[in-house]
Length: 131
Image 1 (cartoon, rainbow, N blue to C red):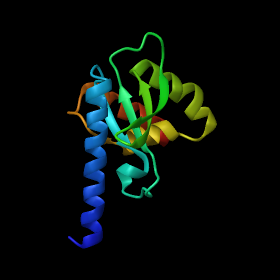
Image 2: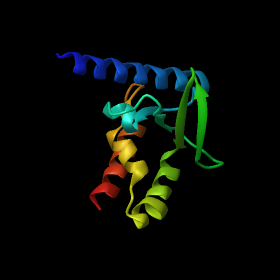
Image 3: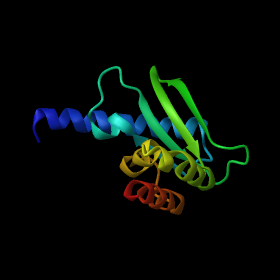
């Protein structure tokens, strides 16, 4: 492995660990957590934020997005359950033709052990992208 590949791998591993620590500290009931965006692809710049997608068993008050500082870095966190994710897919992403959230879910790297919730979310996301 060349030096550039080694740096890429180390940066992605560090980003995965950062999102894992964030989820385990602040969102212990999350069933799935993904590192997404440029950090997961290894194309981040020094000032890029960390995109994370969290899935919960149920969010009776609805989905939310938050931008937080964690360990000296900026995290943009998208929080959903399967119902809110399906709603966003149907009502926002598909009509707009810009499936940003589904792309984050399909391309994201799981930072927690895989769950049926994550598998279902990825199926939903792929349906939007394929459409």
